[in-house]
Image 1 (cartoon, one colour):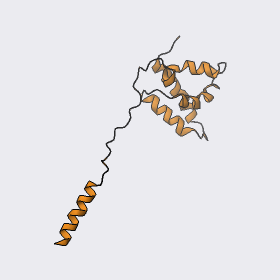
Image 2: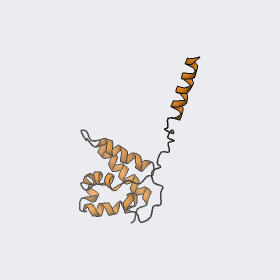
Image 3: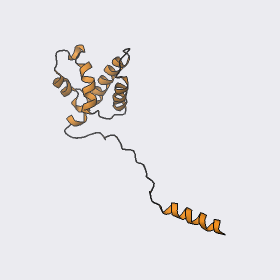
Image 4: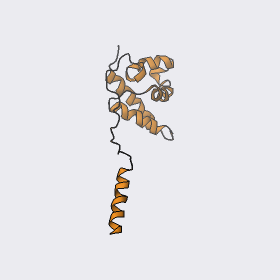
Amino acid sequence: MKQTRKELQEELIFYLNLYLNKRGLRMKPVLRSIKHDLKKDFDITPRQFKSVVKFLEREIKFINRTRDEITNYFRSIIIDYQYRQTKPKRPKPITEKPLHNLETFFEEINADSTTSIN
């Protein structure tokens, strides 16, 4: 039975929660980031999945599968493995950058110099 995208996200979040509850795991910030992306309905990158697949291949459900088979199983939530993007990518923050020029600096200097002369 083919699982929906949402079911795959929930399944991966379930496994991530298991790993996050382990003591002494040094990858917790990475796993939290992946979990956050999945909860926000973002796809994960191949690099993010690569950091999780080494744990997944030890799970009973995946123990007889290769990494490629596990990757193929989760491919609908991995960015590069989709044939077409159905969900929006992460939005890039829009920041307005101030105009960097010396006009305001020179205007301030000229205003200060004219007032100090008088």
